[in-house]
Length: 370
Image 1 (cartoon, rainbow, N blue to C red):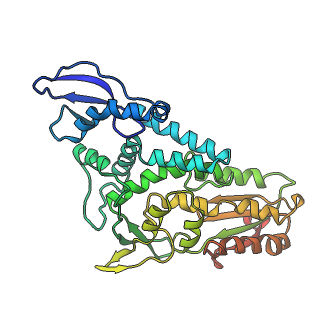
Image 2 (tube, rainbow, N blue to C red; image 1 turned 30 degrees about the vertical axis):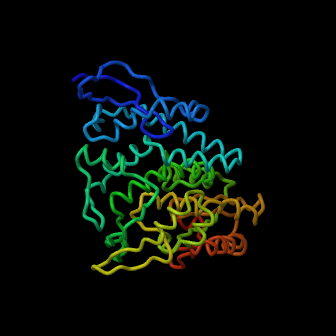
């Protein structure tokens, strides 16, 4: 038995650098093997690559073959590099409005073993990793995690219903929380890797909730920039979307979210189980799903453009969004109530959403400072 560092072609289009423990078989020689091809080589030399990698792929499938991958010894730097490279290409294709190419690259990434490994790692290392879905299954051992990555398939995939829980809110009410199974969470994490480059490319520049490298502090800082100067707008529309996750239109999501529509529809229609009773879902995306926050970001993308198209530069309109809350500045109450608010209501209505009347107000900055 020896230790070697090899490049092993695991998926059809990506190379993953892993430490491989080699178990010697009769007649097997230990030594360097040919490395896997890059993505560009794969696209140019597909047939030649298939012939060269047949033996290696066969050994990965066999239970007692020549090599076995150890989850704890995966070189995550190489894995992340492979995924990041495809994500950058997806973002570039979207910026250039080459949507067909972006879709093809999304398909490649969702079938990449590197992406599957990262999806499993994300699900098994986050705060909810010990919370099971309706199947009461959690993955705790390296063997479970590697087996989960190998079992991720699009063909024949059918999500299970979600497990419904309730958590208390500050106002004393209960917030519904729907928990997918571990397998469904991994599928969501995998497709999130393909969707996030698009959401980050298209999202409004002053949208801060549920986005990587952005925080509530960034939203507060933008509020300061928009309101701190003497000539800044002095009126604010404070907006809150009522039951945002629970009311998003499924039709709008399926028509507008740039991802695998078949998989998305299965998630949206999976239903949930509460007190041993199955309940169908006709609207909304579950709070508790890994991909749900990004779906919300894309749902609210375009609000800035819609509002500014209905106002003039002299109205000093600025929009800062954090999750399902937002503020819109203006030079007067009249502008916010007659120009801005109707546009916001129309924008949300197309997506199946409404403003919360009890939490939506037009306020003057002087009143806030008192």
